[in-house]
Structures are given as structure tokens and as C-alpha cells.
Length: 375
Length: 253
Image (cartoon, rainbow over all chains, first blue to last red; front, side, top):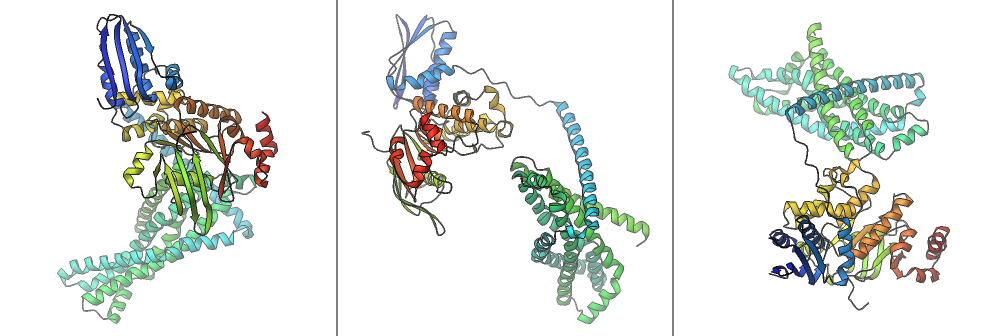
């Protein structure tokens, strides 16, 4: 034995359990094994001799108390003696607490839990959709109110948000669009050169970027970058009770916090989309000029033939709608934050997922409507 | 007291950028004593606690714990120290993804080789020791009140049967009855477990109820003494603190 020990002896008087050394948590593992192995046999009485204990902490005291309880359960009369005076308060405390009632077993997972989960989730999703529609209505009402009194537009806040979501997003949007342009052009050349039609890569890139890729890509980047920021900002204000403070000061959080953000994004996203379109076509054009035998004037005339103003406006026209959706969801989830900082993180993730989901769903709806209209 | 100090600080300085928090600060804490640290807001009480437990680097000076200098200590040395102290942060700092029982079990599971059954028994013991109902064990931190979270945090701090207990404003945010109960709990645990307690507090009642000595953080240094010593001190802040209406009430009560 290292520096703690249990010696069990059977005498005429019954079982004698002599404890010695350091009864602390470091030695509790070995002591636990030794004490569990104690077999009272047919003894009618047991006695703990604690005079050799040099150190005792609550783990050691618990082991003594537990063993005493177990022996008593088996009908032995148990005595304690020789406990050094220094450890009496600690032992008394553990003794008073007694033995815990066994913890209830963790609930079993059952098959019908799956059904319950599906039902719950359906219900929760339904309620969220209803709440989001309600929030949409509240925003429309606030917009109508502000339109009646344009002085109530918070101009400083609006400009600051345009800077944050628009100007500051330009490097990342520009870089990613440029690279997407390069990738598209590369794939176009690769495939179309099999037919000797690599010059039509200009048509491919021009139409796909202006009509779909530019705006959707920008919207997805902005959902990840600015939609999440809206949720985190408003959510943190919600945790700090700043939103409640606004309400008690007679200010409408939708008007003060939500409208400037929505308006800022509705202004910024079309501009960013224009920038993204430009950068993607720039990327594609640099690759085309370098890789295939195409002069700048012939590139431009090919682009001019391929792309019409309608295609450009279809792409740009979707941007304010996507911007509205991203900002609406971002602010809505921010206001859903309750209590803890933990929910800010959870709802920020949710806000990005929902915003991207809505952007792509609405893009699909636009495609269907446009094809129905024959545009 | 004949024994050597369990916490000894010599010439400690801490700075954030150009802002000097502590300058040439000395402190001795003896084994088994309860030291209360008070001071105005922003004087660096919590920073001092964080510096002692190694969360915040000191700009100069030495911090010795259990007679060992923490200055050039490697990760192994720190681990040895961390197993011998418990820290209760202001809000309890429970891990929100774990239940109360799992929170208390974490240090046991990481730092001991005890088997699962004994760990569960010790967890249950600690939870009852801090006065939490057994039903709280299976709950997550978000499901219990602030006072219960502090008790659960205390149970986690006590999990490894530490020798030193660091408390950061243990009674802040509790109602007066809850605060008095928490003081009583810390006092009785300190006596029965033989703990050394380093307590940062604003609460004059706590100081009067359980602290052996009081360290006042003033002018970047500590003035240590008993309540009676501080009452005689004529530094304006100390006078305002101990002779103000709250101070008089705490002493008179």
C-alpha cells in the first residue's frame, strides 16, 4: 500500500476495519475497491478504527459513511472510533447528508418518440412561419407610417448600415464574383471548344451571370455576412434588455432597429449585384482573352449580341426582393432571442439558413413566373 | 500562525495597455483563513483573482501558491495547482450544454481515475452538500435560478476537494436572504472542509459574517487587516466604505 490503506480483520468482537494514511480523493479509487470487497461473513458487529487516518476529505469521508451504511443494511451494528478531532466537523457534515436516493434512470428512447418529434417540429415550423408573416405585416405597417412622415426615417442609422452591409462587403463580393466568372469561363471554353464554339462562352457567362449567378451569389454571401450580423446585433440588444428599454421609452423597435436595416440592404444589394456582375464578367473576359484567340472589340460585340437589357434588369430586379427577405429574416430572428447569450448563436445560425433558403425558393418562383410570362 | 502562507504575492503589477491596475502589490493568505477582497468598481478585484489563478498574465512580480512560484511554471505545474483549487465565477459559469450533475462530474472525470459508480456518488454528495435539491442534478443550467446556478458552480468548484476556494462576488445578484444563506453555506463548508477562501466581494454583510481578514484594494495596492483595523483607518475611501450607512448597519447587525 502506498500511503493509504484499509486493513480488515475478524476478531471475537466482529469485523474490524482499520483505516490508515491519506483518505483523500487521489486515493479514493483504490480505497473504493478495497471497501467494496469487505465481506462481513457472519459477523454481527463491525467497528471502524480511524485512528490511523492522516488526511481526510469529503471523498474519503463518503467512503466510510457509505460502507457503514451498507454494513448496517446487512444487520450489523457498526461503531466508529478513533476519528482524529481535526476531521470531526467534516465527517459530521458528510454523515448528516446521509446517503442519496438513487438517481432516476435516464429516459429510454422509444420508436414513437420519432413521431412525437416529427409532430413537434411541424408544429414549431408552422408557428414560426405564422410569426414571420406577422412580423412582415408589422414591418409593412411601420413602412406605411414612416412614408406618411418621412422625417421619421433614421438617416444617420441608414447611412451607417449602408456602409456596413454595402461598402464593407465589396471586397469579398468582388473577389468571389471574379473567381466564379473565371471558373464559369474555364468550364465553358473546355466544353464548347469540342464544337469549335468557344466564342459562345461569352454568351454562357454573360447570360448566366447577369440573369442568375450574380444576384444569387451576392444574396447568399450577404445572407451569411449581413443577415447574420443583423441577428447577432439585435439579439445582443435583446439580451441586454436594450430592446425593452426602447419600448419603455415609447420607441418602436421595428421602426428604430428593423427599418433602417431593411432599407439599407434594399439599397445596397442591387448595387452590390451590379458590382458582382461586373467583376464576374471581368474575370471571364480576362480568361477568354488570355486563353482563346479573341480580341477586346470582338469580345465586346459578342457580349453585346448575347446580352439584352431585359436580362440585366431581370437579374438586378430580383436583388431588392432578396435584400428584403434577408433583412426581414435577420431582424426577425434577432428579435426572437430570449434571455441567454446561447440563443443568440443558435438563432444567428438559423437566420442564415432561413435567409438562404428563402432566397433560393424565391429565385425558383421568379424563374417560373418569368417563363410563364415568356420573358 | 506558524505555518507558511498558502498564497503569497510579492511586488505584483498588472497592466492593460497603458492602464496600470496593480502596482507593487503584496499579499499573504494563510492556510485555513477566509480573506475578503473589497474595493471600488474598476479597481481590479476580479483582475487580481484572475491573475492569481493564471488567467491573466502579470506584468511584474511573483505569485506563489502552496509555496511554489507560478512564474516559470509549465503546463504540468499548473495542472497540479488547478487540481488543488476551486474557482467559482460570478454567474456560476456552468457549461450550458451539460446538466448540473455532468458539470460537477467533469473535473472528477478528467482528473481522477475513479469508476463511474463512485463518481456518481460523489457528485450526488457534492450537490447535496451545497444545499441543492436532488432533483436539480438532471437539470440544465438554463432551467434553474441564478442562486441555484451559484450553488451548482460551488459544487463544481468543490468537486476535487480543493484546498483553496476562489470566489468572485459569490453573493452578487442574490436577494438578501439568499445571500445570507450562501454566506452561511460558505462559512460552514470552509470550517468543515478546512478550506482557505479567497473571496472578492462587494457585500459588507459577507465580510462581517465569514471573513477573518479583509484586504482593501486601494491606490493599486492592498491594505490588509481585520474589520476593526479598517475602521480605524482614515483613508477617505475606507472611511466612506466602513463608516457609510451600509457599513454601520453591517457592523451593528
